[in-house]
Amino acid sequence: MTTSTERDLPAVAGGSPAKQTPYGREKRYGAEELRELQEALEQGTLFYAQGRKVRQLEEAFAAKNGVRFAVACSSGTAAIHAAMIAAGISPGDEVITAPITDMGSVVPILYQGAVPVFADLHPNSYCMTAASVEAVITPRTKAVLAVNLWGNACDLQALQALCDRRGLMLIEDCAQAFGCVYRGKPIGTTGRIGCFSLNEFKHISCGDGGIVITDDETLAERLRLATDKCYNRKPNAVTRNPVFLAGNYRMTELQGAVALAQLPKLDSIVERRRAWCGELSRRLEGTPGIALPQPTPGCDPSWWFYMMRVEPQTLKADADTFAKALQAEGLPVGAHYIGVCVYEYPIFTGHSAFAGGEHAYSGRAYHAGLCPTAEEILRTCVSLSVNEAYTAADLEETARAIRRAALWFASGGH
Ligand SMILES: Cc1ncc(COP(=O)(O)O)c(C=O)c1O
Image (cartoon, rainbow, N blue to C red; front, top):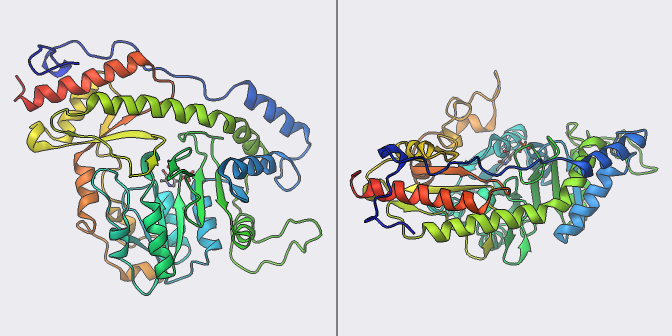
């Protein structure tokens, strides 16, 4: 381990970059996906209600998570929208969610005519807390969409208890959290509904896709209808008898085939990310001026990315300066993650979701200052891209780069 007394100069100070070889990478898709795709094509139909791949995916994913039902769909955004529809979210309702997330979390709330309300985050787990959610509950609140950011869980037990007490539905956004375990349970199974994304950048992927899990049969039926224009495709059912508004969010058999082939790879992907990131945290412990990501108590995260925070007073550098120094070392890092909180986007500050007309959210003021901790997280965070193929040498070089850069800045840059 490097100490401040050793002359291990960071790249910004003229040292040679710590990262001398490319980070480990592996092909995401291979023979298994090809075999499933071929089988899908040979079925002679790519429609989920006629083929077997989407159904097999749903059965396998439900079994993996120990729940009764899984419904596949076209994206993570669609998964969350289907959950909102199934939960009965209606115009004027309020749904509490996180200010640091993807638009895919909030678009479905707006499409339901409902009002996104933002709960502040824990400074080191970067997730919503029961206290921050409780602080923004009103008589119009109908649901909480807990965003399990970076593969870490929110304090879901406390959130579920709060939701039970206040008559709200807890829905989990698990788009970044495949494989995360919370108090011994798979992510997405503490709340009433868990929503996952299979887009290209997630732990497992089928290019684009989503999947929703629940133990509740009524919700499962509504979820299915919500992904398919409210058409009932069950054998002998009257198909065209829609009773609520739903788009076409169907997953095709091609997506189902690829996702089905990806699913058995998930455990290994998560284990390798866990081992790599866990060891990185151990090696970085005590580094001056750096706050490490803190998993929520009881959570074993699945590390979609590794996000630390700079403590500018101690580090004597801000997030941009530190990120540049790490980039000079050859690390795949960036400062500020999504830049600003979601509620600071023009679609919120200017209420520009629709070209005209009234939407319930138009009456709500969205502006900087709503969630001070989340804003502080974004001002100070530096995130490192993580891949399951990263090697022991990658770990060694990454840890060394971060430590020596931090030590150099913290000691005044000389
Ligand atoms: C937290 C979160 N929620 C929702 C989504 C939306 O997923 P998709 O891109 O599959 O629609 C994403 C995707 O990046 C996400 O990270």
